[in-house]
Length: 185
Image (cartoon, rainbow, N blue to C red; front, side, top):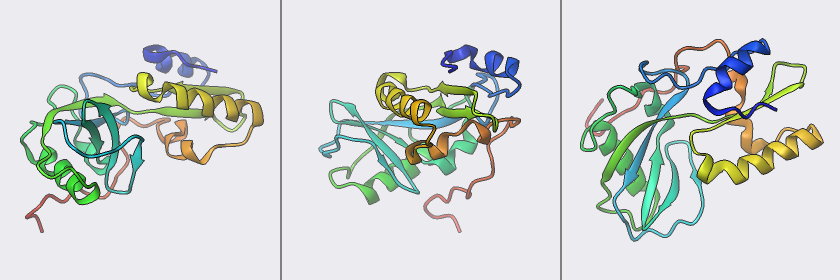
């Protein structure tokens, strides 16, 4: 199992399956996404919520972390979008549409962060890799799911969207549905 953080790319390349890790100088790379951090809200959320338009998780003190996967193509580590710009507005609109208690949501920060990778490299199921930007919150769950996959050799559906194969050989994000901001046709 490879769980080497920022050294993941070098180690997986040595195994013949290069998994790219976040390049702080490259916009829209396959390894980064946009994460918005809200102001404190009266919403009641005690778990990760994943939907086709928005992913949400609690961040403590009433704050939420939000991500719209279709917006990740615009992620530029060198120039994150403004907290009062179009991306932030779209994330807040989606949040208000999704979850009660989020009216008046605004982003306190909008960050470019790395994406999670979890699964076997290649078809031979000999090297398993696990890398994430969010180890403090996802680490316990990812560790349990990875251990289960390693011991049972059965893939877990919760990790289906995070397989290394989606990044192998990529330098840019795959095409997703284009983001539509309010007022755009």
